[in-house]
Length: 188
Image (cartoon, rainbow, N blue to C red; front, top):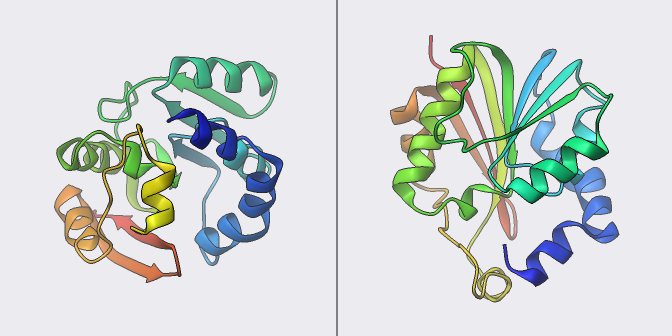
């Protein structure tokens, strides 16, 4: 992420939006279970709110500085932070009750790597487990925020087919003004 984007994603305003809008919308009606995977927590504002809702939360973060800072900040809690690439997670098959990711898929370097990440998430989920998340829709603001930053936009129209190809079923997309949420179940 570029400097501006990092500042926004670690801000009090973003924390408020995560807690008041994003998590309630993404997780409405979702049964997370007790053992949850969060992919790409970044600075961990979503993690702060999420770990209070579950027994165990495992976070996979590719950025070493962010992973280390999050691990230190949440040491002694129910959160385990792994500094790993989510396209090749060193986690056992079928071990999580659910998985989530919040506004991070567009930071994955290519559509092919996004698809690899989706397959990895499917691999580590128990059959029937839910994968839920949110990502941004293309807009001028979104494009400006990502100057000198990775931005591989996820098309909400084609995303259900990509999820199904990765090993999910019952994919559902809901559109909002500048974002979309998704839900899918790991196929049995």
